[in-house]
Length: 110
Image 1 (tube, rainbow, N blue to C red):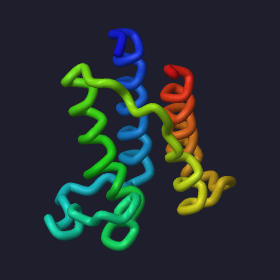
Image 2: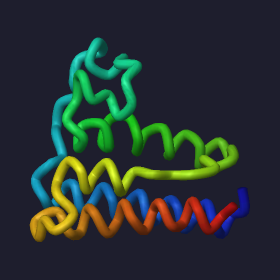
Image 3: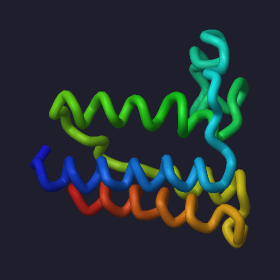
């Protein structure tokens, strides 16, 4: 992974975190270990989507970037977010944009 693409993805992750905070979806306390251990996509059986973003997605991406490992080959987070929040949800617009931009960054890197 190039330093430039790593920096762009890291910046995008900060924008996702900011959108979660501004929307009031950032939580101070982590879910239970059991909830975080779900094997379902997006932990749909144990976590809200925003919890998955905060407690699974963002930390995993941070580890990848800090390790200098390869970024995922594809990302399809926006469609899930649109299903959860609604594609035209004004209140979630910043989060949806940040996630869409993340998906595009990952796709452009391939």
